[in-house]
Length: 336
Image 1: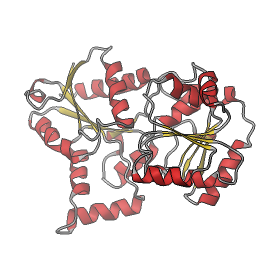
Image 2 (image 1 turned 60 degrees about the vertical axis):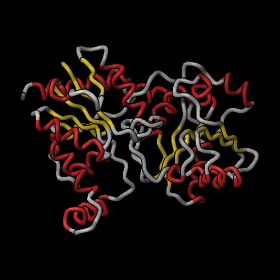
Image 3 (image 1 turned 45 degrees about the vertical axis):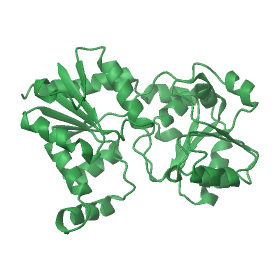
């Protein structure tokens, strides 16, 4: 089967979507899939059996329209992560469809969903938005969470030897306002715990504000490669993983942290990874509530091996993800 793959340039930048695409295609290549990556200089769609698009950036819409023109089946993995409630999203879509001069982004996104044959959501929250707001059929939207490579194999010693600490609060992700590092820094000021923040952007304006506010018990480490042994060891050395984002799709860091034995803390607006609800604790953006949640979770005496067992029973491998996607392809192939 020849499958055309396409994502926006933004989607291929550093971040979760990039690694989602890389890992998914790496596994699909091991099966009977001829992977055709988008090249603007070649006429590719015409000669493929099926087209799979990643992201909801409207820059990929012209290629989706071309796929429809050639009567190709379309799979869309939108990775929806707008910071809107269900009702507000409905209002924005109505305005996008009805009001002259209002941004057409939502109406064009709806069109992307409309012309897709299968939509792959990462979790129940994303599926609910696609079905309820954008009026897609329940059957059309399939939930396939992100996968995760094996984590927790290296152990904590490398990080402990390098930085001299363990049993700390860990936050991994680009240092951005929406990811809430500043609130996390403020929340631990009166707590007896160290905080390790790993991610690029510490020299940007928001990163500089975070550094200025941070006490000596906050350690900043620049972005580490996805396969870095030090990154994996940091997960193993930590006790709690915290990412207090205003909005996310489905962060790869949650299953990575859980497979390393970390309890998870995130905001009320970020969905749990399917199956990890029992080890995920939600909080508001209030610094005092974040502080209370961090303290309560840090005081829990849950053995790492129990957390790891929960994760191993629920987190998909990228091989699992590829096989579920292949099932979607096979289903669509029946209806050429």
